[in-house]
Length: 152
Ligand code: UDP
Ligand code: MG
Image 1: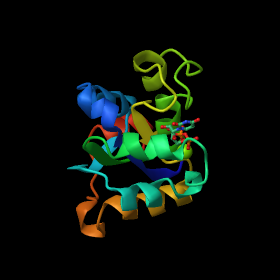
Image 2: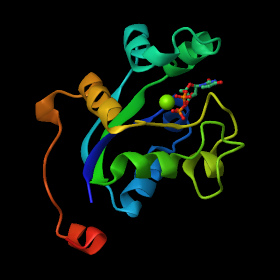
Image 3: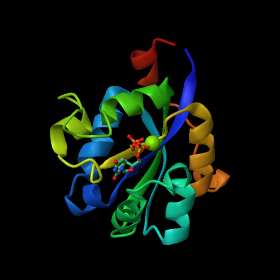
Image 4: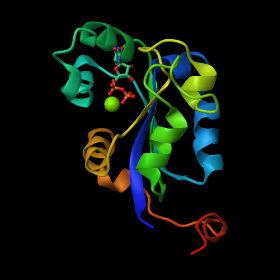
C-alpha cells in the first residue's frame, strides 16, 4: 500500500478553541505519524497561495478574514494512504453534513470555521507541504509500532 504524506492545518478556530491536541491525537491514533509541525500566523499572501483555487469565490473575503485571524498549526502526517485517511478523519467541508466520528462532524458547526485543512490529493500535498515547510524541516523516520499498524 502506498505510503503518502499530507499537509494538515489546525485552522484558527481549532487553535483558539484549544482543539490542537485533539485534532493531532485523532490522526495519530488512526496510525499516521507526524513528520513536521509548526505554529505560524498566516498573512494575506500565504492565504492567497494556500487557497489559490478559491480566490474568485464569493466566500473568499470571509475565508481570508478567518484564516488570518489567529495563529494556526501546520503539520505533515505520513502513513498508508495518508491523504485519503486525513480527509476522511476531517469529514465533509460543511460540518452539518460531516459524519459523526469525524473531526468536523463531532466538533464543528460552521462551513467556514471547520477546524482543519487536509490536502485533497497526493500532488496537492507535495505543493502544500512546500508552502509551509523547508525540506529539512520534514523529518523521515519510522516507528517500531508501524509494523503493528500496516503489517509491514
Ligand atoms: N469555505 C467557506 N465557505 C464555503 C466553502 C468553503 O468558508 O462555502 C472555506 C472553509 O473553511 C473550507 C475552505 O473554504 O474548509 C476550503 O474550501 P474547500 O471546498 O476546499 O473545503 P475543504 O477542502 O477544506 O473541505
Ligand atoms: Mg479543499
